[in-house]
Image (cartoon, rainbow over all chains, first blue to last red; front, side):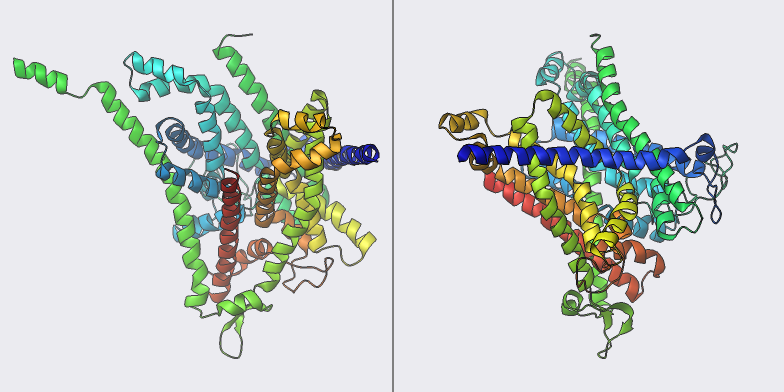
Length: 294
Length: 305
């Protein structure tokens, strides 16, 4: 009796795991199967059209990457500082616990709420309007807790002996950390950055009311940051690829809205896959380089 | 002469200046993050409470009435802000999604930790990581193209509604809940299982009575994390829920959630009006719920120790 019951239960568990794999296969198959036929160089390199079919995603794609770079430029230094503090300086007391709790709360805040806060403060109160920089700030909020945790873990994984050896040689703690421990934890930090890049790239909810939902035409030969039409201008509104998918699905009127979203979804997934796979590969590569182990 | 030496010895070295400078820098970064969190709470709370203090909406009606039309007033001259449909919608999709995701996550996690070989386990790990990486708009798009027509053809109705929202959230939260459950199961010491098997228990009895029991608080944490994510998810849900601020009468009728009303509404209202303030009140509810989920996780963690 027990044996039979055992067999049944184990087979049910196997079935569930199998179903989950099938689910993923169907999902990825559906996204890539529907999307890839629409992805071509023309699709990637022409700007979107508002009303008629045949538009591409060039500006959205550029915006996504530019926003990602800006976000990392703002969030990396802050996370690095906070990560160093939490891993090496923070005393074990109530205050540190509260700080950790605060960072944890930030990571669990719904992204709409973060987006609305940035909308309120930067877009409305500071009168920046819908702009890339407001979007980058929103994504920074979203990114800070995750990146901080990754960096803290990477730093904490370096044995304490390194710090002690540095101190014993008369180096200051700060110098030991920046010159010895940081290079040692670099692979972990870089893996963390690339993984967070994948998350940032697909985020849309926080961007609708910060970076905006329109992608004005830009002139890719114009590199003057202060010019309205320059792709590098941080004050222009910038719809990203993820926002584009949402936008054309909720109010798109072009004839090929469905194909464009399918194509954009496929591009989004592929870029994120590259980030995720790249994170592990890059981490291993840098580790091998630094420790000169093959 | 003596003073000069004394001065040189007592002078702070370059190293210690660097130390002070560096330490203040990293403390500044940490405090900056904390300040950000505090300012989010302060801003959203003050904006969210304005509905009740400035526009004199009643707090009781906010949670119990189902008419959402902030620009109109009821017979007492109070704005009509009944958020019950959104609150019910949000809880509806979250609880339903949690209900579906729990057996799948526990089953997959048990398979990964107890039954599979290392190769299969690594493969499933990769599958889960892939699922985590898919952005929420893509889930919404798939929901719109696959889940909604499926529900329309097989269950009737327009297809939009709580069932569609919960299905999309189920797939979205599955990887999070599964990988946290796997961590919880892995933390159960091996000798618990060995002892149980040695007593003659079958594999299933061991899993059910020993492994799952000792990992229970970790599994609860995993489910609550999944629910927190589902509750705060905006776009994927907004795309499939139908966006009608009506009291949901069944799982198949169009409904709305706190997040869907927020995403649709903020762009259509003017800062400072009742309609806008009412939306900030919804954001405040979201904020408090995410805090509540956090407290739950903390409490479970504390009980465990």
